Length: 365
Ligand code: NAP
Ligand code: GDD
Image (cartoon, rainbow, N blue to C red; front, top):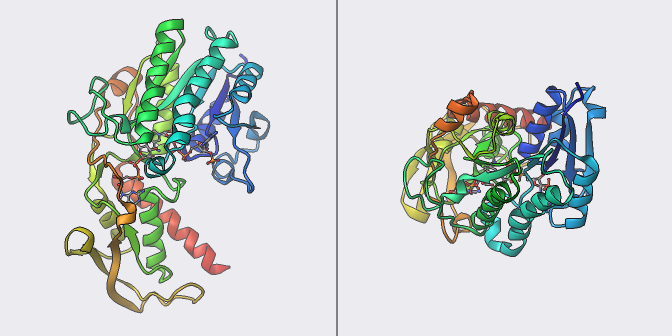
């Protein structure tokens, strides 16, 4: 049987890297849309797709979700069996600074993919997965959130993704396209972008553990998220497109933790505990940790001190916040046989172990 062909936009991102690895292992030919950048941005992709046989089956194409001609010609030439539309300006906070660009990529970018499939005459062949998000629920109408929960996005990111969500449904209803939304709750990994809160915290805790970083500045410690592992979530994306009909699915763990608990879990890994003092912008997290030595010095990890390791900065608050997210993924579990393999504690431990290893390797150099 001929290998299936997949086209992944956002292939250089966290999910793009995990999904490429999954599909290559399943024997797919994988085509990825990659932005031109002044430096290589394929590090996570290459680290996760190390199988030498993957070389010929992974092809990267320069492109951009904002470029209709480029998206259309790639889809027309590749004629994929499956498209995973993961490309996005994915940072919620940044979307307040760049709302128009965010809408172009996240909303119109999705429409460009759907219309390209339609115009290229591939509606009967190509299945489309859209990276929808729990940010659609925003100011949540019920707890936990299900496929039937009304939406109330709270950022330009969420508003743009809502357009993408409905565009998928519209193409399904208008042209019988196999197009599905995965409404994924937050998912993280060692390959998470460095400005998302999980990675920011685990990188900081690793730096602090080796005396190389003094403290970390955070925003809303009381925001609650349903955090899963990206490896488990790309498996759900694939299952959504293998289902016998196009439908929309919530993908979540059903367990919720606050940013504060995330910080506590990360510092537990380095053998210390956080004591919170003060309130609001004056709240701080204090812990006994190796003395801060600044960059360059070889740290003596036995020389410890009690100091402030977490401070609050107004810079990291958003004009409108999503305070709480908790998903109910019963539908995906029942219809797709999808299941969570990684707990929150295991996720944080895996990220911490990875970030500590990176620091150790840097110190050896
Ligand atoms: P990510 O790490 O930020 O990756 C985003 C990808 O999109 C990167 O490859 C990025 O390229 C690419 N991209 C950005 N703008 C583009 C443009 N104009 N044209 C082409 N490519 C562009 O995000 P992720 O965590 O993997 O998330 C994947 C998708 O799932 C996103 O759509 C995100 O909104 C959605 N989602 C994520 C989560 C989550 O918790 N991770 C939850 C729900 C939904 P560069 O490498 O060049 O920047
Ligand atoms: N980034 C960041 N940095 N967030 C912080 C910080 C900080 O210093 N301090 C507190 N937070 C809070 C945010 O206010 C938010 O409530 C929560 O931590 C999570 O923030 P992010 O990690 O940036 O993720 P997000 O929930 O806004 O968005 C992510 O998940 C969505 C799914 O719900 C992104 O991956 C989106 O692309 C995705 O759709």
